[in-house]
Image (cartoon, rainbow, N blue to C red; front, side, top):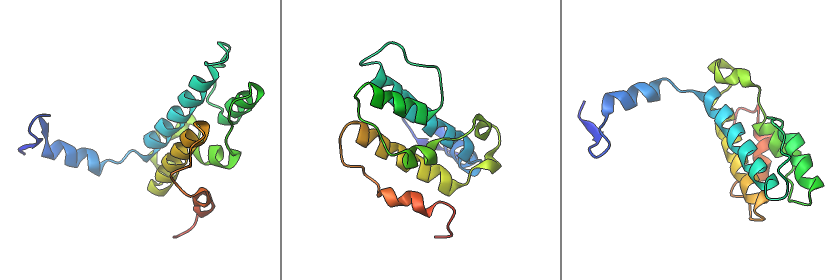
Length: 130
């Protein structure tokens, strides 16, 4: 097809292929990585002893130990996921990937002492048919 965005050279048919192959698992993993890197960057402002871990609760605990802002573990639990999600999309639904993304933005806001952009009660909707 013709370029979707002429300056990018991206062909419309390539975009359609990508859109037809959603990677919800990889999206959720990327959200975990974003949240992890964000928390670690805050930790590095006060210590160089930052562990190699994907455990958001552990990182949150370390933030608190160093007197930095922490976030509700209910948000972290929505984001936390096993590495397997990268390779098996059937483990994550579109709704879970989106909710995880939204909660990661809330985590970012809370760490910066800002108002979260999404209602915290979104976490209560996980597993519902709404």
